[in-house]
Image 1: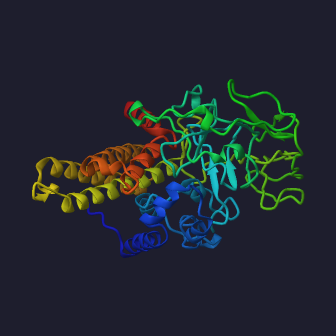
Image 2: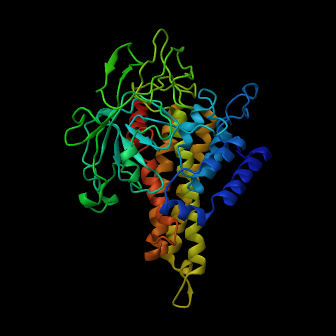
Length: 444
């Protein structure tokens, strides 16, 4: 069977590549790495181009396309190293007001207990209790970790000395609402990684000191100071409620809403939303309020209670595919122009083999990712994710090898691709969850 992109799909991919080349070129990428932050204007432009509303039905104001087209545009986003919680906002389009148009930035607590762009997001899906800022290998992806989430104990994070804990109740929060506000000085945050990822030790004196709100309780995490919110919040799941320590003035959100619905309250800060399950009310919320809803993708999620959404896994794989393709291009370009001993280094067999292996891995991952986009089968998605992770990580490493020492400098974007590939490999359950899903399928 021959699988070729249609003319419309090719035009969609070309249009997205042109948009990103114009709005987020190499110079903008390096500037963003030096001064991390979310470009709201670019985010809204992506929304206007239909990036987030690709799978929203036309009857609801969306583009009305499917997973294959979505994979194509996320591949281009990965190729350009576009920062921001793209996957979470895309999945929220059609359910969270403003997400489809790019007016609202949405992030979530993934199945591994990591939260991207917590301090800049308008809406956070999930419980961000005691979110801990982490110093990340990727300067373009600020991360927080939820201690105790992801099914394992909190680990010691290299390069993250005396992080400031953020003691919060369940949350949907607005930018500037204070979750992690003390930690916003951290240019990047940490991610669990292999020893080879190695982060330099951080001088505790250079880190922003922990702080706590007036009258706040003791740290929720041993060894960490917490910033406590005032008031109490209603637990969305199970109908239980928990009280937070009293402190500074709370922002109240009165009234109740149906499951998954968002309501704006007159007492809520402008632009802030609250959500509650049927028959429950959200009162005296300290800021963020969690949204607990089924997978927006509509695909099966379970195998385990905290399994990642297959669409989130697939779109992450598409971003990894974009990185694998881009680093292969960069390696071939450099091998053809860099000269040693009177000839391009691409003439040497060792360099040829590196570039050939990068291409093979990238094209193998491409076939798997595109096939998973067509079948939408969680097992196919898991296989695609593993191949894409390998293609991105090993490809970026080989690209660094081709570039030599200059590949680690700020003049070259290769090191940013490698760092982003490391971070993505831990997103949406990580490779271990995909391996377990494949193992269960093989033994079934």
